[in-house]
Image: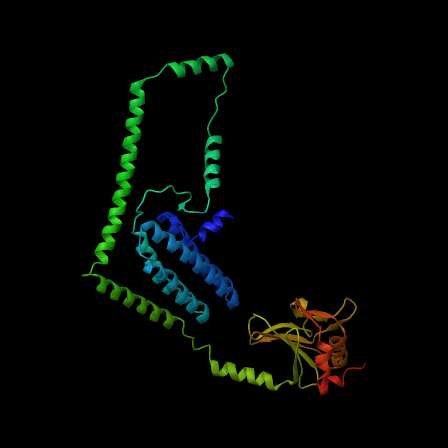
Length: 372
């Protein structure tokens, strides 16, 4: 729980390693979950807001750590939020190119080093207590040490030897080695910091800043235009033909009525009942046919109860909708079951019939088919 609190802490400090880990995790989580939940816009927007708020808090802590002005705070998270909304609502996979904008801002923040020597736990320093994670690390380190089995007498004598046999030369050698290693690590870290700062100062100097910004903007626009060209519909996807096919299908049915659980019933040309519902499926697919007994077996009948089962004549899909056709001989039985039963299942989908009787009773056509 404390670790989650530290992700949304506003007054703490994040070193560069923690900041880049949180930022990249937010980007990847948004991309993966948005692709997985592309049909659920509200959930995708919630995930975007969660990732943006986490990224905003991490940016604030990074600014605190580098002693930078808060004028930076809205640029990275704001650009991430705007590009995220564009990706969610347009649905173009190529729009992920736009995430380069907040990514570049993240890279710029990484070039600023920490201005004070702080004691970090998991890259964090602040009011949220993460000392439990440090104690866990120490415990694991202590448990991993090897304990040699010894006799009691040997252990005692060895212990006394270790206590009395002190070598200043060896101790001085250890201290010298540790100091040399620490100085080498410090110099290496300082070189990396100076290199990052040198690159940033060279790119964003007054002389080069306008040129760099113009170049980045130009590359992003070119990448976006190219990606949009590749997402244009192919000649096979003719919207005019597709629309005419939908209109032709709609003309075949009469007395369409939508019931409370988002499915519709209608009458086909031969006075047979057709049940329609929305689903993410392939278009123009013959799912089941009684004449050949081939296809999805779960579509071969509509089941109100285990005893009350009515066979379908055929099931197909058009425009991401299922169409289940029944025999004209079963029209009256179907309408009465839909009016008086509690639920039914068809093609693996379960539908509630609550409120169906009242809805059918308001239709002059279907009310005549129901015997009370």
